[in-house]
Image (cartoon, rainbow, N blue to C red; front, side, top):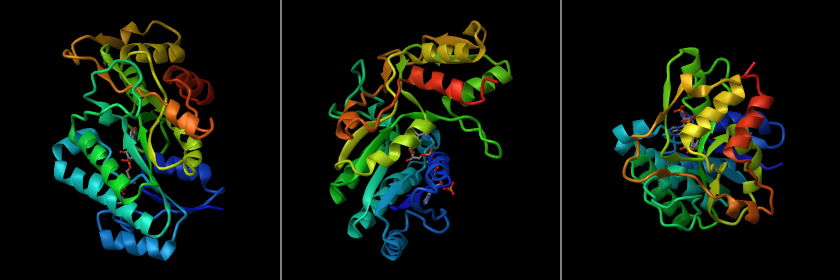
Length: 290
Ligand SMILES: NC(=O)c1ccc[n+]([C@@H]2O[C@H](COP(=O)([O-])OP(=O)(O)OC[C@H]3O[C@@H](n4cnc5c(N)ncnc54)[C@H](OP(=O)(O)O)[C@@H]3O)[C@@H](O)[C@H]2O)c1
């Protein structure tokens, strides 16, 4: 059984990973208080004491808005903290898995699914810090697997605060009968957390490098929302989902990722449905629509 250290295990992705794989691996899940990733010595000491086989590094400041307001804190956690964990993992021989973000593509002007080898142009602090973390991690640990994740969603969980994700934003708008504007000039993959969690163990044996990691989506965000509404409620979405033609006036925002590299590198083990197919499965397999 592999021994896996998870940083950020109490977060959105970490909780789901732990719940799914608890009985298949030995999981080390220190709390933020027990292992603060910004404390280099504490990170090194923890790694030396526990010698995990894999480090799944999920600890982060993941709210882009918060990072924009608190750039120094974002830099400390998302860049310095990530580098601390990567360096210690390399020192004690653990495979390092890092969650980067599709936000590194935020300023790209190309259309269509973006591959890992296009030059990237992040525009906000969060995206810039993720990119800098990727570069520092690759320098200290060439064997590290860097996963550019897209926006993830899951069914609302009892007992936890409602996560601000695509699904919950729409469910909330419907519940409150409040129209929701969705950009027509935006393309982005939106990925069911279940697919991320199922695919993750297959990334542990990948060669070091950067990989797009999430569902592709060729449908714009407004159409994606309408489709999801219709899957849920059957009727006409136009009462709740409104097209926003104004956002991203200069060029379309395109965060849509091509996930062919990871599919091939994993021999087909890492595989994501398209965003629309993922949403359809989500509606069929969960109770959100009932
Ligand atoms: N959620 C998404 O849609 C999405 C999309 C793309 C990429 N990502 C990336 O995927 C990763 C996981 O995201 P997530 O949504 O699970 O994040 P999350 O829900 O915000 O959880 C972040 C976790 O990091 C911990 N943490 C924060 N600062 C820490 C520190 N200094 N030391 C140790 N632990 C610390 C938090 O613990 P406390 O709460 O106790 O502070 C929490 O457990 C992140 O790298 C995120 O940037 C997420």
